[in-house]
Length: 250
Image (cartoon, rainbow, N blue to C red; front, side):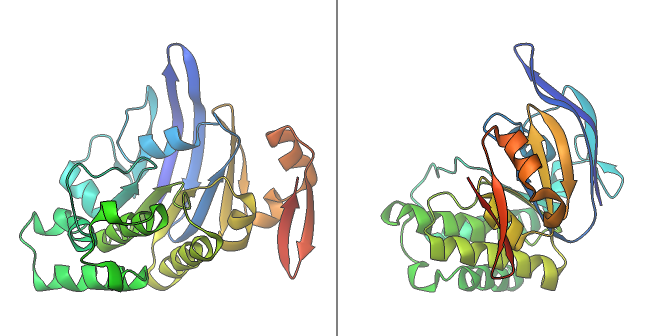
């Protein structure tokens, strides 16, 4: 279980997280949605120890993530940020193998190779395993980074806008993969999304943020309402049920 308690973060006196409280149960996929500047990515960055909170804390099974040893956290929690730019010329295989570093510390084992091969196969990157990242399209490169995170084989996965640069087919494939990983492998996945219809279709829970505050959280049926979405996004939104799915039109 992940518990977020009274989390606050400000930049130059402007709050970007303002007393966020949230409990994420083990398992399932949770989407964080909200307009630009809502604090979505900042929340994920604090949870992933990329930035420090000004107040409050995040715990995983009672363990404060800010004070736990980095090696311990890396075996329990994996993070994928938006701005993933490798500093060296790497192949897809090399990149995905980096996901095993918290376990092998650079000395790749047979078990590591199994995890790497499985992640590459899940993301449909088998034919690209020996290609350099700078030779790939944006969508292919994004899938390679997601494969790296999956190869890390952690209990918790944090993903910041993982659908960036992906076409419709690959975006749906990634969301289906995340849903299956949560269900079949017991992963707890938190994903920042701009596409609220993807969140409704593939996530078990949705967290709504606005101006650094948590506005509401619950199953898609509670979040996908005309009144809530229109208020949060400051634009008229109507929700319809199409082919059994809740779809927001705006």
